Image 1 (tube, helix red, strand yellow):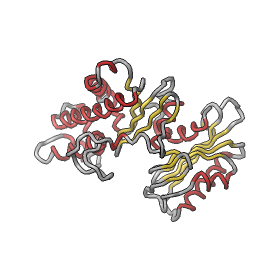
Image 2 (cartoon, rainbow, N blue to C red; image 1 turned 180 degrees about the horizontal axis):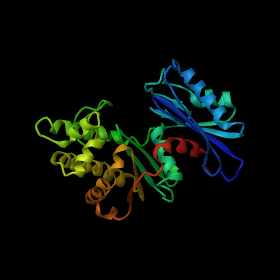
Image 3 (cartoon, rainbow, N blue to C red; image 1 turned 180 degrees about the vertical axis):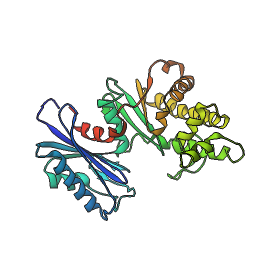
Image 4 (tube, rainbow, N blue to C red; image 1 turned 90 degrees about the vertical axis):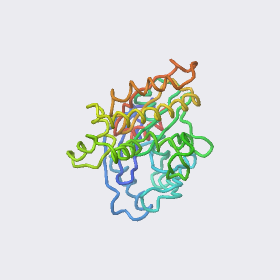
Length: 315
């Protein structure tokens, strides 16, 4: 994107909202919009809403491309969303074809985790690395891989589903149909479930903190209690760190990254998480890998999907 007259629109499509933004050649946001998806009844209506937002945010600027981050399984080579989410009819949707024909520009489509990975690599905490693994620890675990400066897609654009690597074959059932997937042990949901299980037989301030905030127990309350040396919270966090590090060690042995970028709600624990995670990961990797990588928090926050989608046109 050396041409300063080149503008790109990035779209971050979620289950409940659509965010769109116009970017200039330097990756700066010039204009943005956000809309809810409530009331949309068909895939065509969702696509029409995105097209309307593109026309609105571009404000007459000559756009050269549209990058789109979609939840679910995505065939990025053909620009088709294969597997739906809670959006209406959101399966086998040929986004690249439909939107490309309507807008007259190139449209690139990736799943949201890959968009976030690419955004962090181009504009965020992964900038300057050669080989990067991005992992988001939130409701589940999302991941994206950049090898030798290129987003790793795989034969069917499904590469990087690290959350469904099996870490305990006899573990609990996962929504994917297998047992003992990484996200069943290291996601924000897993942290909450582990805390709830322990609190069936033990007292903990985790519940008090949740009740005081008027919310259901979450990983955030676990880390708040951990900060106050609550024994249950300490046990839950230690267990989570062990499994987070186990998955990261597997990724390090597989991809040999020089940087691992950690995002998602769990990463907001900051210094309560990262020193322990670095130390545990270092213990689990083979000796030759020690000192070859760094583990850093993500840098782009809520705009990561938008930025990553637009950065698909980065050159």
